[in-house]
Image 1 (tube, rainbow, N blue to C red):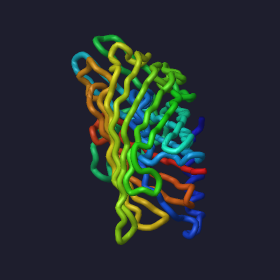
Image 2 (tube, rainbow, N blue to C red):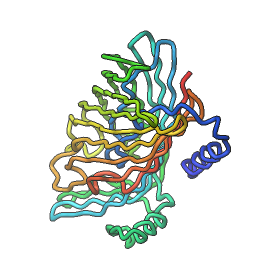
Image 3 (cartoon, rainbow, N blue to C red):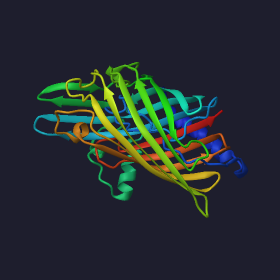
Length: 336
């Protein structure tokens, strides 16, 4: 797969900038559909938190998402060493359908690629421009793919060949606890079952069955200029034993999210969202494996019509080395 994120980004941005202003309208404030894109975290079924309002009965909600992540971590202690140097592209298709009033089913089909990528030079220049530390990135070979973990002299993980393929498919469900579309306050109970359909040796899957359930809520305020929304979620995920660092994998994690958005005009919304989770691994003194993670996504939504919109976001690692340096996120949404 040759630079799919470049192609997708160029097509989408070209389309956006070709639209006259009267085609851009009715921006809805909803959470970013993204999670931790670390190669050792995105293999699990950590769900997109979704909207607090479910799809109405008989209607479908589709999203095509691209997450382009650049990873560089080089850390060690007397017993362990880890190197995560590479670039991942994850293209996900998320479909949700209202089967009846207050009930929704859905599926997420991901396709991933691991490679050396092309972003190293850009990110090094960005860090130099703003005086950010390189963290050793500028001393490493450019556009290299090497994910490696060694413990007690034994190599427990090594991926150094580019690959692409189907990831782990998820089946989703939702129940509207309170509110819904056109209500200022909404609360939904959601669940997800992730299947081991991806190849774990290439880090396209974990080899585990993962089940998640979570509550997601939102509240909207009308302002003199547009409207403001606050949204958040909290949940738990259980996992069977997988194939990646199997002796150190945890069988349960907690996760949550908190975000706020402001739409000053019908065609645009600005959003900030924090996602977090507890660690996926144990028996390690490295924060890359055994530390809580928080990521911050900043961006917004452009509305082409009442039913078609585009999310654009950039994600940074708030807790350093527990998620990628930077992730570029695009999500094209349609409701029918």
